[in-house]
Image: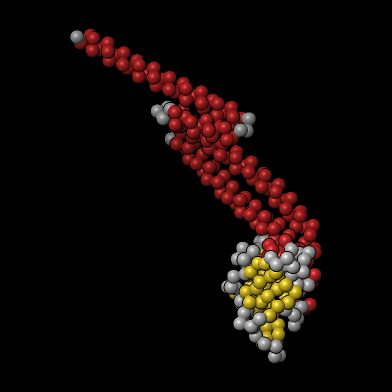
Length: 279
């Protein structure tokens, strides 16, 4: 009886050892497939193979540990590849900006401003005194804004504008979050600012209809309307173009910073893993 129990125990032990060995073998095949995918630069496939080891062979502990190391190498290469791509995109966008930047006036008060603004030369303040119009600018990070400026003998207390195309289509800003009024030698001056994205789609509407006569209605306590000049329509299109490029550059730089942070994190984890091996 004792002999039979011992034989049964040995049989179970052999089965367990064989099973463990078989699991590690199958998991090892997945790991090898992941290594091959990694070597040929197919990082997505490598990650899929590594993840499958944990799902299909959760008890293949040794292979899973090796998989963690390989996954770190994959993630490192992915981020390095991303950085190369982003850097090429950054250079391309910067060339586009440099090619057209000379067509704009740059304004920055070094004492009070950390970030300067670009605007169309026709819209510098000196050329537009005593005039009611829409003024467009974009800062160095690509944030575009529009200012509705009113000059007249009486206040209209406006906080929004509505722009209308000849076909009756229109766009209207929400109430401005940044506005003020003043008086200069009896002339009433009002200004209200609207950032792109918080402008009720007015800026995009004007860019889309830059070749059409646009009527501007100032929405306030009193009624006032004017027509955009050809130069003002050119200004919105030109500034909008620059804004798209500058905002792209800002986004690329942000993504590059994130990639660098991920690289630092992965390298730190790899170093920690190596340190544990040598302990």
